[in-house]
Length: 380
Image (cartoon, rainbow, N blue to C red):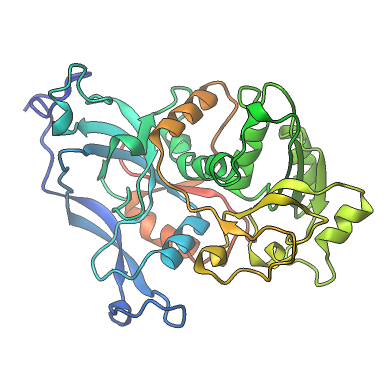
């Protein structure tokens, strides 16, 4: 068959798509194939398997078939996916951030006057819903609301690192915290572990965006683990205040005492990118305003209803359960092209060597450890 035509909308002249493909998938241990998903019996996976004969997915009438260029993951993403998703007894392809090329378009869009929104041979990036197989494979399926056009000024590797952390930060600020920049004249935000967390980094990008905050400059305080990180955050993100919190956190560290000592007022939004150790200290009137938002990007305990003890007059912590959002991702892509938002690549490995990378980086216990987005190079 002939190669794909630029901006064509159907599979008529597409290069042959094989019935099988290369893929990584979690191979459930025999002890994990059970109905009991309680916390006393957490999900267990025996290993990550690389398969050269994995079935190529077949798109539904509403799905795009995309040839993956790069896929990206963080250790927190892998950990949270296991904590929040029920045990599965079938192979599950991991890694839900990706960048790739449109191979076929939804058949239900072919009769529309303008055809599908994304055309064959266009390059897109996105976040696949976690109820579906991910992008650690030659091909992945996606719906229109999971993808956007890739920013033209960055590589496919960098593009794959952006969707999950940027959408998490966006939804934390504008959905969970209900922030409306046009209705405020001031804003005070505390972000923990801002230097090592990709969500924290993307939140800083958004909070310092003049297009999002044209009328005022939010006050930002961050916690970080070293003086070097503090200096870098002040230089690159123009943060107002930094709090040094060594890892592991000293037993005598008290966040509210730090606020009182520096005579800082409480914040409107606290975005936790560290986890339970420091999250338990944020529930104090000295830190968070009455009616403020305490949100965690790494500690799933709030969503599992085992929250830290709630003090009178202070809000309950909530876990930010990110959802795919192609429309918002398009806005983020525009910000990338204006150099307001950027991704950060920790390392790049080929898909064939990805099993070891996934296994080693899935072992982290939470946001306290140094983060980073790891990229799988799938197809060039």
